[in-house]
Figure 1 (cartoon, rainbow, N blue to C red):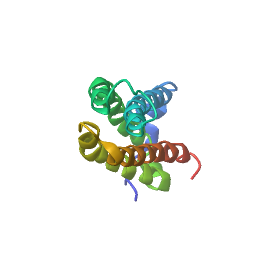
Figure 2 (cartoon, one colour; figure 1 turned 30 degrees about the horizontal axis):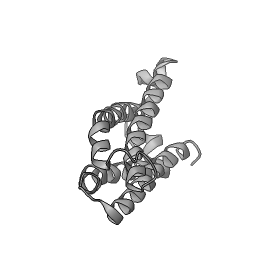
Figure 3 (spheres, rainbow, N blue to C red; figure 1 turned 90 degrees about the horizontal axis):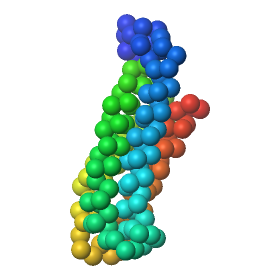
Length: 149
């Protein structure tokens, strides 16, 4: 896929030596916050930590931070993409990352939230927590591999 007539040389992220790195740092911090808060809930669902709080309490306590992380990545990601859309659209790791991001967001704010906020998530909680960790981890790996594919 090509973005006809687009010249990356005119993008402000490519003409200022600090713009792209700062945007990338914001993107990584956003993912750290987003995935970190979700992982806390997932680990609780798996019975591996935070045993003094229920998963539902953790969801409630981490919700503002999870939303902050999501906002940071949803702002910085398209900016990074705009630096060279042809490069990103032709990269298999990027396409996988975006696909998994959409699926993970949908999963997290539907099934994951429903199970995590239920009074007794049980075995379903462990399954959902494990799947969630795998999904979000795959996004991290795909992001790293963008540079190598």
